[in-house]
Length: 109
Image 1 (tube, helix red, strand yellow):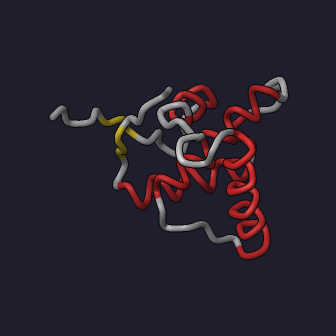
Image 2 (image 1 turned 90 degrees about the vertical axis):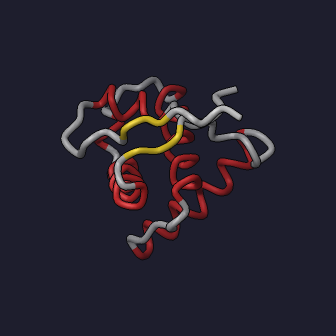
């Protein structure tokens, strides 16, 4: 059995590209039935974050949210900085805290 490869969660002061590249180390659709299912799950988490400022303790779900945000950023044209979104920064911070700074690279299919 092959051990997973790991990647470092970018530091807080990383540039926009580092955050985007990290977001793509996780395939956000797996287990959600596609973009619509993931979008619904992300909306619930983002709404909770908007109301309370809290995020779940599930690193994988946080990474799915980040992956979804990166895809949305791309499809919206990428006109604004990805790491200019407070939700993205909160996701990154929470992932960094819960993971200890590194996470497995997940299947990107």
